[in-house]
Image (cartoon, rainbow, N blue to C red; front, top):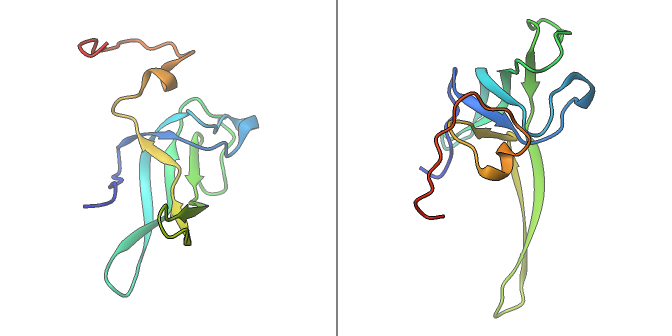
Length: 125
């Protein structure tokens, strides 16, 4: 498939500080409410924005949104890749919504959290 689908009611984690004073920060857990897409000439859809409910955020609402809902916008990151044999450099730009699925999280993202229930896989530890 090559891309990660986002769906309404999907648990997600924000991966960028959007609004620190209102609690919409890297590591915030939320649930996808709605998505907006554009479709290119080849029929491929790309998400342009997403509304996420973040229960731990401020209850001060954004315009026309209920409390605790936030709009997540895409972030672009320039990437330069240098071919190891020819030395040729290629520049590309990756644009995506800074969200991760939150069906599970790593030990790194769980640090400092209070979790009511945890399943830990220690087989490879």
